Length: 494
Image (cartoon, rainbow, N blue to C red; front, side):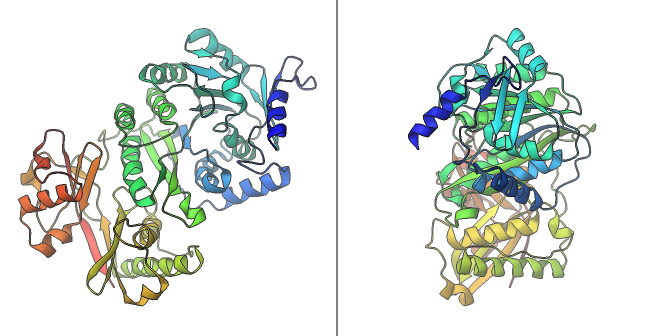
């Protein structure tokens, strides 16, 4: 196997005369490893992923950029498909691909084109000669470093999806070396210099946190997604540098956000979030994946940070029938997951298909048995509840995993959250109405509104206990560097 792998890398430099007398062939480096090497099997896998895509939000405007994962397709493919589904019948014929270098260390940015033909089991993809040459001529930070691409997977695994959803298209494949601030700005400037029209899309390839328990990983991922949703590239770069969020292709993603904004993108939709544990059933050590779209709506955002500033919206309408459905989803999902490692499908109302943030709390004989949630609405509410129910049952680090024998004695409570609102003064906090989240450095703690009521805390005690939950001194909320958020919740139980 090792010998074959080396030979493939060498063959990648050969000339395919039948296509172009001067073309360099970039042979697939990870076919048979990250995705099936057989054309028929690969076609079936990619087609199935695209067919399994659930409801997508309406993108009322021009798609500027996508952010997609790049792990083995069995893990990240079902997530990436949510982004690629948007490109079906889109008319896109130019794709600008950016990602990180995993195998080869270098400074700056490497483009593997022009005159390079990338191959997969599904066929050949040519580089866009005009755009590649323009980048090489105008940007000193960009050069051609073949070694950076020969064994790199982050762009290659995108090609089978592009070959399936697009007809005739060309690519501009770029890899970022060390993702320092200068290189990030250089790539952002290069991307901004390219003409972007309805037939062009930029794609940043990145996985998110690596090998944390799913519940802990979510705390990292959610901060990064908050930056993404608000198109705050500078804050995302700061969070990456401070290890408050993790993205192996974070530098490329930051560059693309900057370029997308320069191209008029004013909205972001998180299309799907998940992790490798959704496939393996093991939530103790996972890699996370996000599919997102950045687009130009033609309407300026009312706030630069949606869901974080301004007045709290009224709680979403949640009739009793929807509450009963969510409780049933939570219980049936836990039961099925503990029995078979899979999750059941549910028929839900249109209301529950809307993005929603929620926590699922499990108790047993009045004692807490698990509590996990999501503070940002990144997927449909019914999917959020199903996901958090599993996490509360098997991934809360404070407790051993729930067993099948405990199911009948579990009591389920669901809290559906409003968006977070940043607090500028503790006087804004109302005990009994508001929940709290406090962050300081890499520490973050959250307490639901009902916790303060249950323990009869006053406002100061609530702030102190939230600090304790974050692993901080009880007076940490007074620090100038501390960030305090409040939220409300619709709370219901079995």
